[in-house]
Image (cartoon, rainbow, N blue to C red; front, top):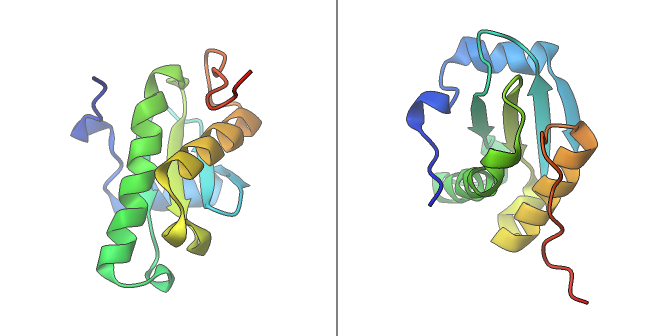
Length: 124
């Protein structure tokens, strides 16, 4: 079972702001992925959901979906980048499998995977 250690999660506002300002962004309709190669936040990840998404319950669900998508594929990721995942309005109604597929697609476009991503969900 894969876990997401608390020490790998970005919590400080200054770290979030640095990733927002300097990081490169990749987006789809469900979330925005910021990728930031830096030594001081290496291998760390942050999750965000703005107040425009809804009440606290909705924002927490969005962050849970983002964390779960990241957690399931964290062994495939490169260690030399920091990531920031920011939820969008379409994610409020999305299911976990849809978010996971979107994470793999955006991650492949951003080049954050160290090893090849297995094609999940394709039936032959």
